[in-house]
Image 1: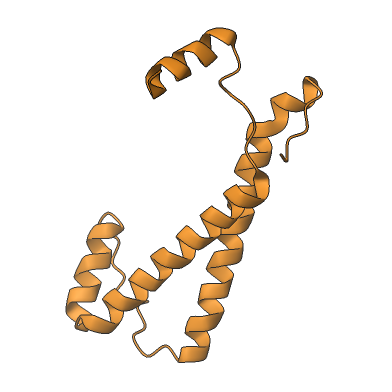
Image 2: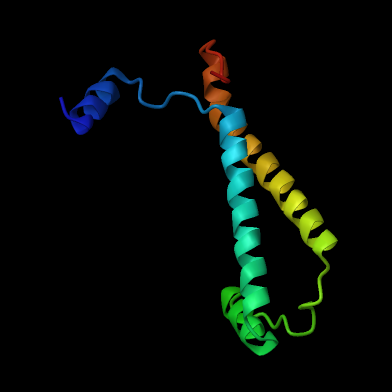
Length: 113
């Protein structure tokens, strides 16, 4: 039986939604945010200031970042930023998964399988 047929069969039963594991979802969000932060650091380290400003100006829909962009960030600040963005992503992922799992509380299921 193909995967598509299994999905259709489960959907017909009405059991397609399920629950999201909050810890795993939060971890995946945190790691994704940290990875994106590392990519940002690499872009800033490998490109000249003018190219970095142009890149972030287009990324932020024309918002001029030239007056607020710092290129002399210490390694300690980089580590703090990485930890902070991971925690922020983790909290966002946990919030999304918890909100998604709210309907299962009515049915008496456990939401953190």
